[in-house]
Length: 140
Image (cartoon, rainbow, N blue to C red; front, side, top):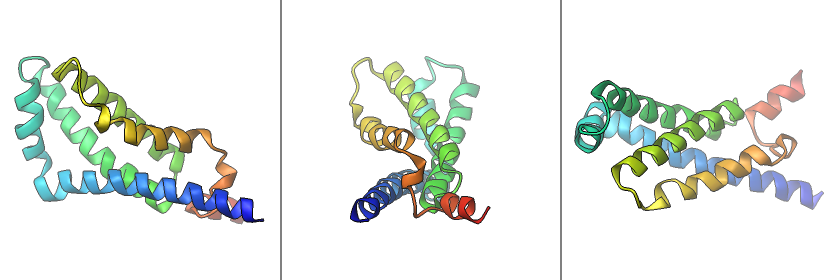
């Protein structure tokens, strides 16, 4: 019984920490800084000579809102897989973007998010007892 509780607690902690990392990053970009400012100060300045403007503009909005929405999904434990897939797409985009920006770049932007994300995708969903997904599936 203790092993089951430890598994459930472990998954909950991983999911909450990862969820809050993305949620707060997205919240800051959307509500504090503003996505338009994120675009102007980072995306446009960094990629204006590399990528078409419409791609960097769309990417700034996509990544900012997906971080916010995906983070909320993970924190709530609702539609966890969809949240992980969306957040995984952000990590792929960030990896590509940083690679374009600088051939040898600091991996801290991706690695410490990728490891818990991959763990949540690979660990059995039945271990995540403290989620809305689990509550909903038990009621069916």
